[in-house]
Image (cartoon, rainbow, N blue to C red; front, side, top):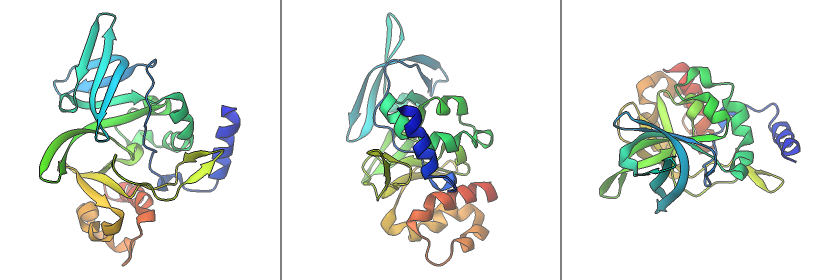
Length: 234
């Protein structure tokens, strides 16, 4: 069944540039496969998820079983980055993203073997929520082309129209907002409604590229524009 579904997904997008799609947000995680967590202290942990709590859409705490008698409770401010295993259903739903991403890992510092094996990459970033700054663990949605701009899933974003096969939504649906990090700066929110006003902030390190976007850049073209930007303006 999965093989037939994967074939259908690939055929659906045949002839299409996968570079224009971001990875789908991961909602469910496997409690059987190991996850790989690197703490800010430099300590590297390998273990399975025993519990994962969310608060207002964000990961609030992960209980990781590192050994039979060693359970670690980790909060986002403790974690530098992590590879978390997707649940089986989530992995099938993101099959198209995996097929595309597998061709791009040589240009990225993200571990491609983990990603093609059904992992999602999360990274700690400082985000501004109204008047408060918080340390959040966010999913990177452009892992294969994340230099010089990283784009993270916004847990509160609503999704634009997406493409479906056999009742499963796949790459193509674009969220209405993302958290974006350029260089070593803090994350800032980019929304569909003000994308054109954020162009210089997103692509400012390569001003010559901005002219290629034209006078009326479209939100639907954001992933593809960013993919091309990563190739031309590193």
